[in-house]
Image (tube, rainbow, N blue to C red; front, side, top):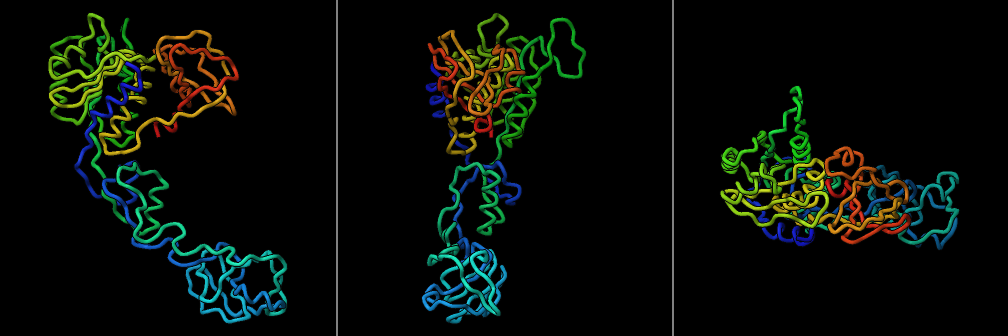
Length: 394
């Protein structure tokens, strides 16, 4: 199945959760809004000065000469209505007084006695930020379904919000499979490897704000796999496993899922990560990712993460694809859509020298994935599509 079709199928199966909670604004980073956020105020609440300078009536410039300084208005204070033929000393952010319609920056004036003389061409209305320029009272500031970024937190604070309604965080189980796996800190016997996939997946999920449940390591045994999947399905919103979904005699996860629930898709036209399973266990959504470390990283980012975001209630979930100049040659056209671990440097993108699915160092080194469609070759200087990891995982 093509990657685009698989993602569409997976997202179509995602039913967003409905349970919500209200949290303090400073604890809402990374959470998904459960309701539109409307402003009860205008931002700014009044016309204010964009510069340190002098508030004037533009019509007074026609009379020429000097303007006497009639008052001083710091930020946070309200001035008196401006008298004709005078100027108000004003500071950035201060409310523009009634009758004034223009602010002259101080660099365009010179002091003359107790007043000022304007020494540059002035336009009516300049250097004034009008009431409601940023936000109008009653408008939707941030819509339901947005995952809150740091700048969103500041924006909500600017309308006086202190608490927001968000969807509850998902609870996700991470299950590792394979007789060869041991946890870091345990001496390695011959034929064993450390379980890096658990840590990669747990960190990716924690960065999304989810509660991560360690499903442990299950041996390459059909009955044990079924027992652990059943136990986890009763405790979490979704199960994500790594390994055991290929066609080997010791790959039991696919068969276990089919016996306990259903399998919606299996085997994608993707590299790395062809053996990927998506379905359910006793009604609980299930992702079976490949066992190779780079395959886990790529398939989670491209397929599992968008599903999780949609499940969480987020509206915009598709990866953003951009372009860059290739700083590499790729002479062998493959039959699968490839996602090459890459790094954008200046105006070009280069590849990690070893693109094996077992090389996790490639994912750690990369800041982008080059998207290489099937039957495609690349010469240095060609435009290539890529996905920045900051956009993909942010």
